[in-house]
Length: 178
Image (cartoon, rainbow, N blue to C red; front, side, top):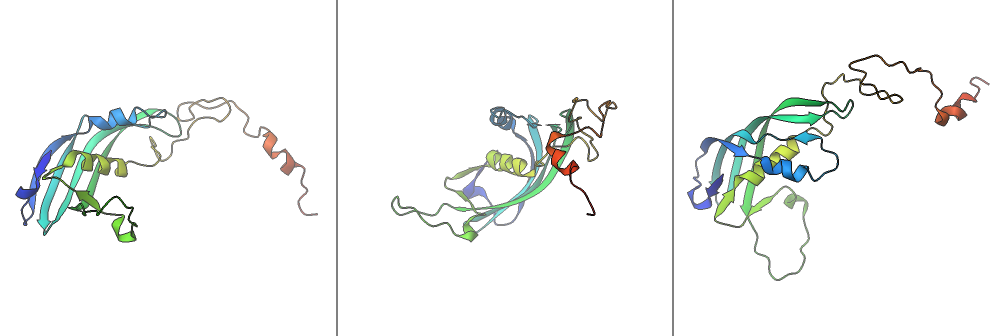
């Protein structure tokens, strides 16, 4: 969805729309380890307004995503609903091509430089920020056995728990209490 900068009012305006995020699947498919699958579109509620040259956006998105569990490697579906806020400021005019020092207060800023703002990449960025760091099918997921690879959520492993790990051999020779 594109919004003309000149048509952004000073009083908040609310809209509901469906935003396509299929591009995230294409971008993410380049990775060798695909942890997430993105829906074709998200339901978005957006409130926007301007104050001077700054444009304020807030809202919420929700959709059904796919994930690959980091513990058991099973694919699962989850719903992601997230509130977001961001501010766009006009792109500062740079004099020449010299590098400028970035200040701490500049780190959270996003800029616009055209007469139209495309909301799709901004929503896509908010989706990426909202994704969990490690996707888990359940908080109590037991994962895979480190020896035989069986999914411990589905079946019991026959491996001996007290197996000897060669990396721990040094600790078995230590005498405690002497």
